[in-house]
Length: 128
Image (cartoon, rainbow, N blue to C red; front, top):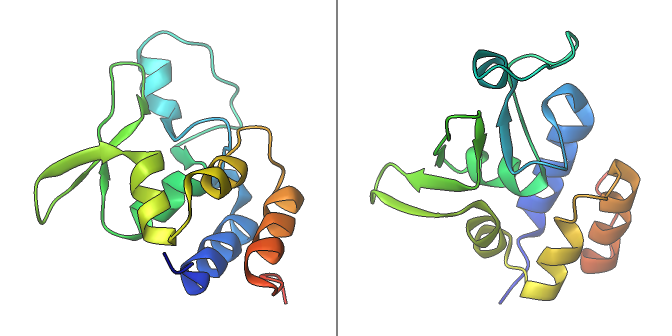
């Protein structure tokens, strides 16, 4: 499987430019839906946020399947009407093996850790 360096770099640049739309601890989260479901959400959070995998999938036309609590673990491809887990779909799009995807998608990753993993995978700095 060939690593999709271009997509890795584009997603990294997207989350670097708009960190308010990035939350590595959730595949996809809708803060407004969480509020509607009765959860307390800090005022600074609004709209939706995605982890690295979530950003990858959304950038490629997939639609999150939101649950009642405003979170999504699966996404649907509107062209072929298939639902897949966000992690599996992102792994396919990025051309990553299971181990590399697990490291890149870890909920504990900071933006710097993601950058370092991309450098390790591609030999190039996505921030350059």
